Length: 288
Image 1 (cartoon, one colour):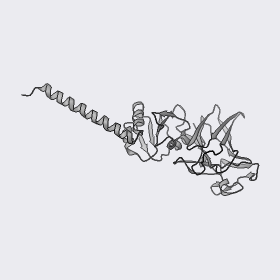
Image 2 (image 1 turned 45 degrees about the vertical axis):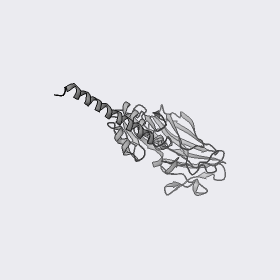
Image 3 (image 1 turned 135 degrees about the horizontal axis):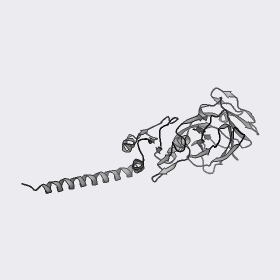
Image 4 (image 1 turned 135 degrees about the vertical axis):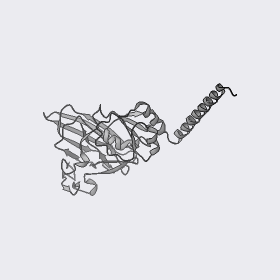
C-alpha cells in the first residue's frame, strides 16, 4: 500500500504548480492590459459598499473586480447615494475625463494613471443637485461682454445664440478629450471680450465639482490657455472666487470648490488671449 503522506505531498505539489501557473498567466495578462494590476489593487482595499466604474467595454475587468460591485461602459452616475467610494478604471489617464467631469479631482490608484478613487460619501459627491448641462436656457444663461460679439445670448432651440458665428453659441453636448467623451457646456471664448455664463437659483450644496478642457478638435501644441473664472454668491453676499485653467494639452483639468454656505447663484467667465480654435468646454455639478 502506498503511504498516505506521499499522496498528500503530491496534491500539495500540484496545488503549488497550479498557483504558480495562475500567477504566471496573470502577469502575462497584465502585460497586455496593465489595468488588471490596478483592479487587483482596488479589490484589496474596496468593499461591498464601493463601486468600480470601467469606462470602456471590458467585462473581464468587471469580473476581476468581483466581489466588489463593478460595471462597464457609460453609466448614469447622477445618484450614487449609499456608495462609499467610487473607483474609475480607463484605458488611459485621459480616459477618466467623464468621471473627472462628474466627481472632480480624485486620488490615483496603482501606477500608470489607469485608475482613480473618489470618496463619494466623505466628499459628498454621491448625489448631484444641479447639473449645468441640463439647465441651458432655464437656470443657465449667457452673455458676451465687449468686443465684436458684444451682447446677450438669447435662447434659440436648445442653444444660447450669442452674436456671431455658429461656434459662438453656448450649448450642452458631448466632446472628446484625448479620445474620451465627456458631456459638457461648450463655451467658446473670444479674444476681445468675455463670455459670461450665469447660473441662477442654485440649490444648497456642499461643493461644486467638474472639469474644464479644450477638446480634440481645438487642441494644438502651443495654443493659448483658456481661463474659467468662477464666482459663487451665497445668501449673505459672500463670494467664493476660483480660477481654473484649461491649458493646451490633451485631456481635462478637474476642479472642486468647497462651499461653507448655501449658494444662490454663480458665474463662469471664460477668457483667453487668443481664441483661435479654442474649443473650450466645462462641467459644473453642484453636489450635496
